[in-house]
Length: 236
DNA sequence: GCGACAG
DNA sequence: ATCTTGTCGC
Image (cartoon, rainbow, N blue to C red; front, side):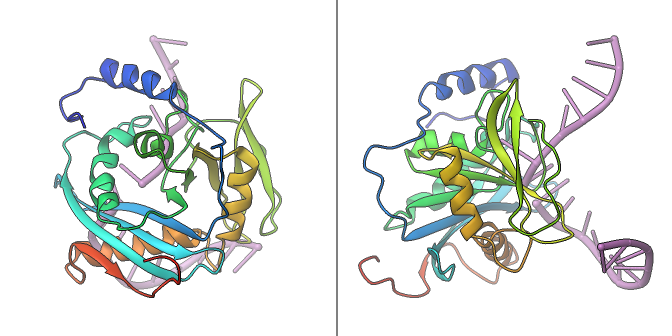
């Protein structure tokens, strides 16, 4: 894969426009979902050493089955709209450590809810050809009306009358999370899957557990590699 | 030109 | 993203 670090903004915009041509939303033989992963990055302020975790959970039980941990160096700065160029390379290092790939991967950020339809989830999906969903804690793009206050209520997010995602209330009295397909999944299917990932916290289980695990990795409580937590019959 | 702006 | 205790509000 090419080194993103020295690229200019005009160059990464061109790359996003190229990757957009490879986006797909419904893969031919969609298999039933048995596993879903959460992917996240962590790092110390003022350091270019990144820590990545991909946690694999059973679906829809949402219990932790396995995870992979890897580090990487990134000098690409954080620029809204270009998060993938900063975080995807290290996530791919963790991805390669998984002996069996999960059915869906949830990324911390946007999917097609992005000016060029290339949020981090779409970026990761195009490179890996894996089904992905973007689940962001904050909105980047798209207009929407606030969903009502009840858990599981949601509202559509559009731009130029194009439906691109949903604001989903995952917990009462908490702000919603922003859901959009990344790659290989339709809008309604992405929303349905994420509803099943909601537990007792605002952040859906895949992302929440990935964040928890990657921080233990960063502070030295866990080490790089692949770890099987609980056997999944048929898998691992 | 101005404001907005994932992690 | 990370740092970091108490505190305001549902």
